[in-house]
Image (tube, rainbow, N blue to C red; front, side, top):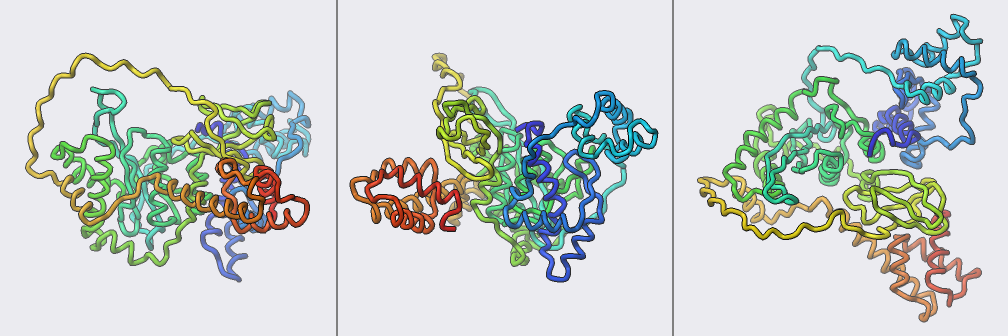
Length: 536
């Protein structure tokens, strides 16, 4: 998703999270909170437009309280009824924009100080919020980038496992393109390294150098090894995206750390890992003629990482990376799987037409009639657009599927001309990577696929739906319990919490709901009560 289309309110909430992230991550004890808040308030921050931002300690305390209670959603501003710049005349607006264009580094306060000091405007006429909207409307609110210095970085080491992760993209081998027979395509590797232990957390080759490819690796690292305090990236677009910042804020990672602009080299650890991968893994591919697909190479890479890299003594630490990480595993914090799933979904806004139909990436979906012509939020996995979630005012409403499925292109006619027969490759003397794969298989280790979490979630949803169906059979008349209709409704609007659903249903039946009501009517009443906070 393009950063220019990223929700401005969500960008503001992400900036607020960056301010309080150290306080949230530290979890100071009683007696230490006030001092830490005052230290953070004494610093100068930058808002979502790069302008200086000063925040009072009590404001920080309020943001932290809202984040702990409602998550990232709690850092959003309440919508205002009207936002205008009618207090300024067109001449004053042109003047303020000229002041900014002359020196792009000028901050809001500096522009106001100049305009008032030179008597270009009356004192008190221009407010910071008004000036900010003026500059933003003109597209000149961003500060100019600073020229990085040439000072080298010092050496350091994280104090404990998951204190700092590093990641980078490595150019991989050319592989046969499965979508275009006879063509080759470059593969790329995303990998994550734990700074303290040098543990290779996870890596995956992909044909796409975009954000979803990185996210599959990042999500798998979080599932396997818990949540890091910080993540260290270069300045690549996939790492700098607002969606990556959203993931970090939702999961509760302290902050993102980036390399200096125009100096992608970090402190040597991830670069040393990439060099080792080139010499110890990629070089071995020439001796493994069977590794010609992404799945085969990824299986071989995980086998190499688990049995070769992570279990050999590191020259810097004099310990095996896996053993060094396990020695400090008592400090590791794991994230809830549902929270991880929500964190990695992309967010966008749509306004369905009067029939409840809207489009997303060329696909059409249809929501319930009550959401027609309303501004809704859609959350989706860009690699699984067959089903997306619909949210309204920060609450989940329903799950919708494709309204119609059209092929992207007509299938090509089968080739009648036989391809020339290639010479059989020579048998390698030592297929080391294939040996590692077989050794890993013999040990009985099976690496879960990146979609394994989705399968587990579907299984949990089915178990919850089964409990709700049993609840309907228990309390309603047998003639009205249509299991197909009930499962279809739960598949779209569920899952419902079985315990809360039981409490709500028993209360409804005791008041005004007949036992022979249609099953969809009963489920609608339960859904409305649960979304309104009933039985909480």
